[in-house]
Length: 313
Image (cartoon, rainbow, N blue to C red):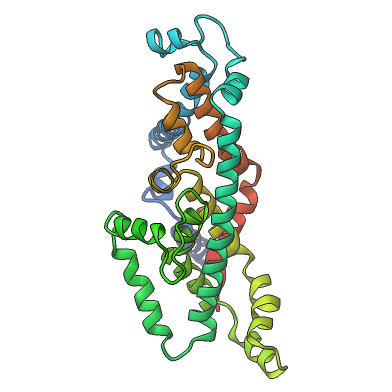
């Protein structure tokens, strides 16, 4: 009886040890974590890492918030003290009107909306053609799209600008129009390949059944592919909107008129003439809006990103 009990205890102990090894997901084993010194050291290290990440991530944003509500003298003389002359709430409405933050913001929203629409259109249709329609030359198109990722953007900047000055076949000058930003942004090889890789993992049986039922190419795309592509649509939408919101060099070249310039270019234009406190207030407005939108829809964005990587064929 004693031998049986000892054997059972030994087997139970070995199973627990194997389970602990299987469940171990760090470089520190369960045995090491049971020691008090190791636990204290890991907690201290965790606190230091999290504190460092918070400082690096939110430190500049907090300082910008402080500067946006300070006087110009306080920003220049005492940049790291909290409002020596008091909080200047009037900086925000003054920046909105005096340096035309409202107009620049509307321009940015309109530019980002166009980049999102055309970028999503090209990414979905391009990925649909490469991954699902798969013509005979699909692999060559895929290779050509992939090859463009290795071309630095600066190399193609001059040729792209010349193309915008005189669009081939139609001979139209797109400078000072949002088409000059929308069309180049829509041709994103990264988004096309990202969508194509997502479509590769969709179940092929659904498309074959739809074709047997007589569904055409457009019907399959609209009724089957799009409803199943909500996760990747969310990911591409986030990447496109954030990229267009912070774009600076290209809008600076093709949108010379202040009436159509976005926030990134408009703030640069007025930086030499605007008061420092109003300029900081304008920068804070331009930064806090996308941050607030992400915080408001972070669950949807993160869920879409997780589902985009979790689909299996």
